Amino acid sequence: MSGIDRIERALALFMVVAWRVTYLMRMGRTCPDLDATLFFEPDEIRGAYLLMKKPTPETPPRLNEVLRLIAQLGGFLGRKSDGEPGVKTIWQGLQKVMTAAETLAALRDGF
Image 1 (spheres, rainbow, N blue to C red):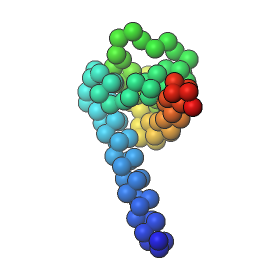
Image 2 (image 1 turned 45 degrees about the vertical axis):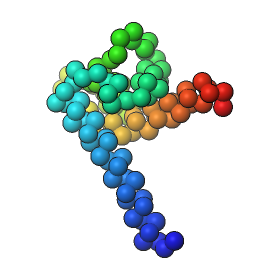
Image 3 (image 1 turned 60 degrees about the vertical axis):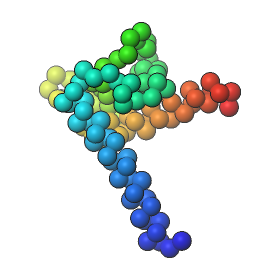
């Protein structure tokens, strides 16, 4: 496999990740009251709440609530003047949430 083939594969993967992060950001801003389970797996939602040391809600959380938790894990401070989370903080938070979700799945499945 040549270097160009590797770069093309990496770019294809990065484009999918960039699309998901941008999609989540836009949906969180335009449709914040949608059910978060439409966009995240249960382990991803659980992982976000666990990492932020907050109890998982009984009812399905809203998209904006979960996105803000994820963005806070990525460095978003959430002050009044900060506005909505951006792509960078969502991406950085998602990396942590994905690790937590994989860990939860491994623990549940018994490694």
